Amino acid sequence: MYENIFYNICSNASTVFNSLMNNTDGFKRINSDFTLFTVEERLLVYQANSIGIKLGDAIEAWVNQFVKDHGYNLLLRNAALDNGKFADFDFVYTINNEIWFAEIKIRDDHDSTKKIGQCDDYLNKVNYLNNHYPEYKIHSCIWFVDPTLSKNKNYYLSRLNEDEVLYGNQFNNFICIHDLFDELTTSLNTYRHNKNNFRNIENINVNINEYSASKWVKFLTSNQQLIDYFYPQGVPYIDLLAYAQTMPQRQEVKQLISICKEHIK
Image (cartoon, rainbow, N blue to C red):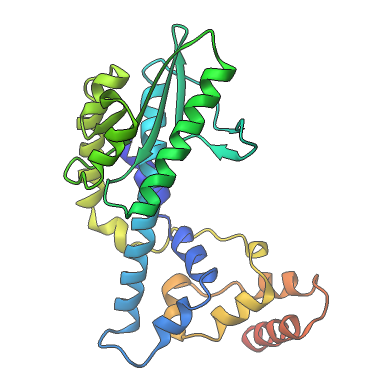
């Protein structure tokens, strides 16, 4: 059940397509002649990188769902902090008049600038919760999911209490769910060993209207192998044409209309 969260977030071909469409240099790198790899191999590398970037979102979603199923109630997802900045909260739940707040990080291997910012953000959020929920007992931590790396542990411990800096399965005791970390690693292993999900691109579901005419032109004039990779059954040129005809007739829109008409013939 829970491994489906990884499939939905990380193996969604639409996620890879969106990343490529919004990356200014993505098509150039894939189409470059100065490489030892085929277009498909380069796309697989790009897909792997895109999946890796989404891992943090997937783990956060997995943990949130798991604790909900164990009786915890979501308190909030974002808020305007007391310093005026708007912030997203990875994990804030309540049960029995107590709050559990965690900043979820994949691993502790950042440089000095990022660790300072992460610590500052965490403390600002803790202050917000203390100020706005004084009637609750608040438990809080920064949780590094991967226990194998602890590059900046001494720094975090210089600014936070020892029970606020957690690695790996230490989160189990914090949240009082003693099989959470094992279940998470099981879901990751299930996903990792299902190779078919990595190469399956047939589940692409793109809203044509999400992308400008210039981005569609960039995609449709890139490389036929790349186009076939995402649209093995054929590009929906009729739908694209209808979309383009609703736009102001700028140069890139006219170019998109011309491309669509050429393929519809």
